[in-house]
Length: 627
Image (cartoon, rainbow, N blue to C red; front, side, top):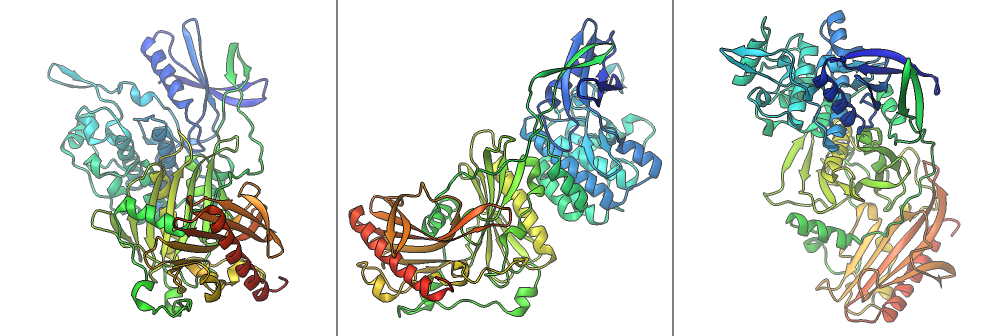
């Protein structure tokens, strides 16, 4: 459609590509305008950017990013079939592009080798948005009736061949057909001299199985499902392809470093014999991450919310295995075999949650940044941001010693040695639970922070899929640097409040009701779970100034927050040490103590919370060097 020229932006001194429609073809001009309108909405590393649409007299143009590359069709013609690894890398990138496009409500409709550009370094770019919305130029005729079909028959989804408008699942089929052709050297419909042969196969749903796809056999089979309801969406296709044949490290790094989120700015001038205008791309300079402060949700509240949303049974290992003897439960020690096994958590304190996260793997959702010190010690986040630095979504991973058990209504699947449970979306959150071989759990939480953010379930799925890929290769990786000698991570939270201190809270049982991962959280409760509740948790934050009112407790300045967990509650934030984390952020390590006493005034509850915090601080001072 149209003619593409290479041109130069004289003001910005850069090459661009311009596409023009034939002056005598009004329909082509409309298609070109539609292509510009759709593609200009999409800003992604793997999508060729459209800068502007210009109409002057009978001529119309779109101004695009210049990409020095060959089409996948040219590569296939010059080199023959591609290896599954190379095709998989291209497929991963184009699936990421489609996920972004579909997230913006744009269906490409013509995903073919001709519309995929591949650079010398292997970076793949999707181009020609809007062409798919043009009528297919190869018109087929049966009798006296002329049928028009959108797309190229070799890569056409069966439902589109039957007359259905192309949708997101049709794009996924076309991507699968394109990758099939790249590997097998032919369409999944076979080889025919006339286009009617391909259409006939598509109408009957006859799709060949891949024979040379190796690790891509399973993903291609899924992408080429005849029933669109059984096909993955683009984000799921990306996960399948990434697991089977991930792009090389340099391409993943490129995707992270060259993310484009341009916004229109001042108009610049490009001279091509006549004057065209195009918005200059915005240069986004690195900025310090300004993290929105979050107060930690108590473990009891977090699990209660998850349980109510999913209808799951919460099983506590303390409910029947320990007598009420006032002693903290013993730490579970995994065997050496479990630690070395693929899919195992291994030793708790050295397991690194950030090693099962990857910012680049989530870059299709926006600008991403790994944040290792954003809450509990067992937690790691990837924040999704706008170019301005504003956070729009969060993929959070946390470790748990207490696997959840789900009812039959929760979809559960086995992937390698681990089991993944997928809960339904609950408002702006979506949870995935990965149960390891040594009966620990990785909790993945996709969260939308504002309107227009990525779908939280797509975010959670992508993060969970990356974690599963890591666990396919071995246990959870270890922390590269051991916890410092003075870190709270070296302590057991359950050992910081002794029976004498706990007796000051009426009705509170002295034996812990729940011990969290690695002993970094401990809960005590009354027998009925309502009259009294205490939680002590090790956590991290970058600012405590808005956590409550400063107060002197055990010769230190802590922060007191009355009624934070309810009218009869009080929370104490007790800073322990300050350090610079692995991404250069100033971070405060602290313990957070929560006390709730049913029916009591907050002043009395806060007095009790301060006394408990003082006891914990004194225990810490006697247990760690330099305190």
